[in-house]
Each structure stands twice: as C-alpha cells, then as structure tokens.
Length: 191
Image (cartoon, rainbow, N blue to C red; front, side, top):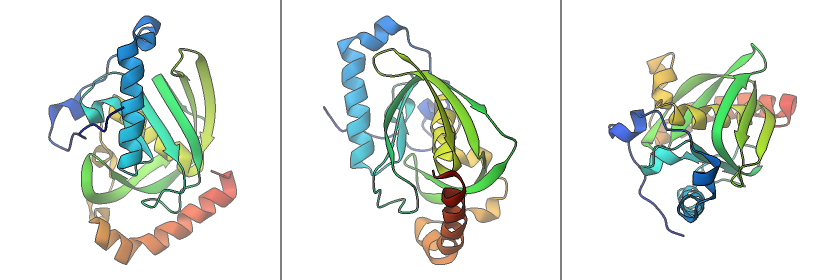
C-alpha cells in the first residue's frame, strides 16, 4: 500500500469524467492494489471520502468512511464502503445546505445544496452488486464523491459564493450554526 498524491483544483484530471470498469479490470491485482492505496490515502488525509480521479486515476471508484474523523466531528460514523461504477439517484425532493470542503480544494469551504436521501447502485470491490439508501449528512458525502467521478467539484454547486470561507474562518464564523443544522439532520435521519 502507498499514500498517493492528491490532485488539487486546476489539474485537468479533476474535470475528467471517470471511465467505467469491467469486472475483469476490477479483479486485477493492479486495481485491487489501487483500491488499497485509495483507502490509505483517504485515511492519511483524514478524508470522509476520496474518488479515484483525485489521485490521478480517472476510473469510477471511490471510497467513503467516517470513523471519528477530526476534520468532521459532526459527521456520523459510516463504515468503509468502496463503490465501483456508482450511480446516485435522489429518493426525495428534500434538500439541505451542506457546508462542504474537499481534499482537492484545500482550505476552502462553501455551502452546497444536497438531497437528504439518495439510492446508490454500484459494485463493491469484489464486483458484487450493492444497493444502498443513504440519508442526511451521509447522503451528502456520497453525492460529493460521485460528483468527482463526473468531473465536478463542490465549487461547481455552491449557490451563493458569499458562503465561501477558509477553514479558519468557517470554524470562527460559520461552524457553530452549521453544526446545529448537522445535528438536526443526524437526529432526523440517524446519519
């Protein structure tokens, strides 16, 4: 396993639509080793998720996990989940404003409207079909990571650029209000 370099805003790989994988490619030692690297890199950077194109591999794989994350103390824990060729479909018209950041957009956060519930269809790392219904803040994380695979970053979805803030100013001026909203979502959806 290896920690990979994370692409930052401006690198063309972040704007590529990641290509689908076949089950044969997924089963290859090269791709399985890449998944290990993706997870190790996500853990090293304290990310809640990481998409393959964020580490210069434009293939449709992302990892999501929240485990007492110091960057996101308000996010509920979610077990390590590997998604291959994921598709996300809203299960509701209800939305919330999520104050998002991104490992590929260091030191910047902003409010993004996300659906409160989504259905995710994908393969796991063994190529088995999985279908998940996720809600609340966790649904926002899934939408964020799949956006990466579609060549989008959270800045593309910021509705009001006045919500943009450095990490320090987010903590100083916006975090308390956002944490209250986040707690309400967690209380409502459990995630």
